[in-house]
Amino acid sequence: MDKIIKEDILKKGFPINKIKFRFPPEPNGYLHIGHAKAIYLNFQLGEKYKAPVYLRFDDTNPIGEEKKFIDSIKKDILFLGFKWDYESYASDYFHKLYEWAVKLIKKNKAYVDHHSKETIQFQKKTPLEYGINSNHRNRSISDNLYLFEKMKNGFFEEGSCVLRAKIDMRSPNMNLRDPIMYRILKKKHHRTGTQWCIYPTYDWTHGQCDYIEQISHSLCSLEFENRRPLYNWYLDQICEKNKIRPKQIEFSRLNLSQTITSKREIQFLIEKKMIQSWDDPRILTISGLRRRGYTPTAIKNFIQEVGISKRNNIINTSLLEFKIREHLNKIAPRVMVVLHPVRLVIDNYSNLTEWVHAENNPENKKFGFRKIPFSKFLYIEKYDFLEKKRKKFFRLSIGNEVRLKNAYIIKANYLVKDSQGKIIEIHCSYDPKSKSGKKEKVEEKKRVKSTLHWVSINHSIPIKIHLYHPIFLDRNPNIENLKKHINKKETVEKIVAYAEPTLNQAKKGDHFQFQRIGYFYADIDATNKEKLIFNKTVSIKDKWKKIQNSNNND
Image (cartoon, rainbow, N blue to C red; front, side):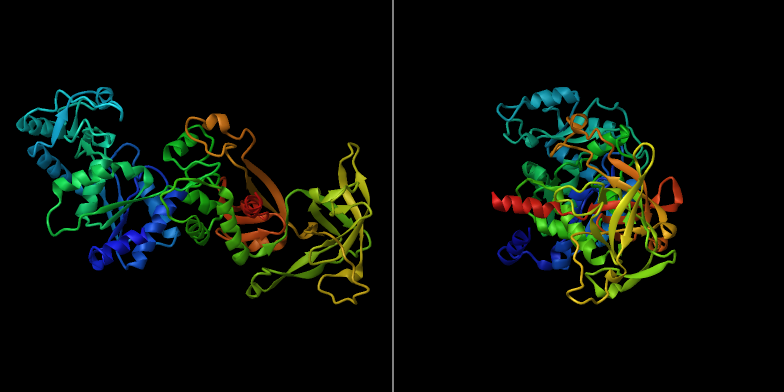
């Protein structure tokens, strides 16, 4: 992109002060991670060339377009750290687009066609054969002007006729085989109300809006590459001398594994109640990512890493996870939380409470330290204990020693079980000389192979946690195979965990590292607006490095 723009400036003499970009979303759904790439590209180029960026809503289809989607789009762009210079709507230009359509009819380059959608599609044929001219193609200019005005005035029913451009039904490019410019939709528009009952198609609209706004470089995803000749043909009909002619440039879409980004597919999941809403943390809408705890920095770093090219490929979701993990590691304070508790009793410890010191973030000393209550009765993760030690299991087992993080070394001595054989509590002893941070002589210093997190039972607070699992098992799901490849297991695991009292101070929007578990984001509980839930953002373990190492070894 940057190379093309530089060539236009240096080799073709394009005035740098005339450069202008736009981001043109359709307000019929929430933005997703793929849009983040287009947003980043347009606004970064705008910053680089000190050029204005328009936010233009492509609201040419009254079906499904709503103000709530406009509001969400604005919120997402601001969340990513960008601000548009001008806000506009395709509907701002409905009158001008209509006037230009009339101009094309007068030039005998557009006509009203009364054939059905199916017949028109049949007449277009395939790229390997010539299309068939409509028997309405050679209507007189006066008849077409009369019929188009009747379309505008609501005389015809939906689907009964359309306005088509008269280009070339023999063209190998299917987009040039007399494309539709206007169709009848007797639906209320979110901005123009019932003023219009004919609406321009995207192809007729976006190039002309680019021209009206004097956008210099129109950046589109690669799917629009074969529509560029149509984009240019429409501009040929209306462009005037001494005005900027927009230039369409394509880039590859951003596709990620084991997820979907299509608005149609997301709407399908909502309707089938597979997800709750457009901002569900399990999907990669920008709002969903925000609720899961993804930061603007991580998303932009991910876009930078993926890069801008014309090659379509599927990016492993682990790269996105790596980028958020990398960022949160620097900014998230550490806390101890036990998700699946088992009771641990230190028999030789007093009944008094001791306060141990812990670093809030070892990556940044400015975060300082906090005090954590330590006592005789603790919770540890049940998965950190095995009654009988196995090979390569270095956590707690009977007769084995581990360190409790920021505290002491303990040794498991015996268990108490209920009548069903379930462990009620683990009884341990501790070494008073082994406190973390205490200087010991080399010959006295104990070495253990594992450090466990814990919380004091009497001081812990219960918190609600949401753990997320992939919705799809297939690497590249789509609308045809959604049901086939959907994860049959529960994709949201809701649990009550026990946290150190530090989390009493948490508020919506805070990020934390739950030590040895993962990174979590404080969100508002949908069922109780006064309570927080902690959504898991990403695990501690790094799948991306494992994938990279595997690729390097191949």
